[in-house]
Image (cartoon, rainbow, N blue to C red):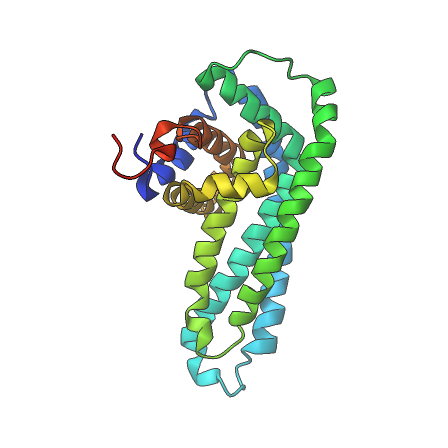
Length: 253
């Protein structure tokens, strides 16, 4: 299988297409409802945050007022990305057990995994693991997001901040959603990061696609289950570390 940015991006789109597939629709419903509620709260809170920060750091009478026309879109993009990630983190925290079960169902349908009971009892058993994983991902995100957000406040440097944030967002989205299939396989968060580094371009492409889905109105309601499905398919179809393609030494056939 060819792994690259475009193939990784395609998994996010394939996940969106498959949310209506029989056998998956029932498992998609709860994540979509969670997305709807959290998105409403995120838009409301984000609009208040944006107005407050805009007046604080880019006032019309400030010394950067002559650059306001240039910095305003960059500043707005930074706040939008912050809201998107806050929305994504909260929605995933609430829906984590359901996303884990959705990933298992995808593995059954497309990976030939044995069918397992996907009831409330199993979801309760998954709750400590999935919530603990979400907390670890949140810590990983904050440790890197806060320094990047500070760059938005440094004149001159803030011109490069959106690009750096976009790269980080793509990587984190890949980590966020790959956790469900890889976590179901028993991989720890550090092991999941190592697995994705071995397929970095595909991971970044998938993360970029997942990020895009969260930015499109209405589509973002289904972005979370679509990304879970896409990440699971990417995990199923990607070369594993024990595959010959990854373990052979240079010069060998």
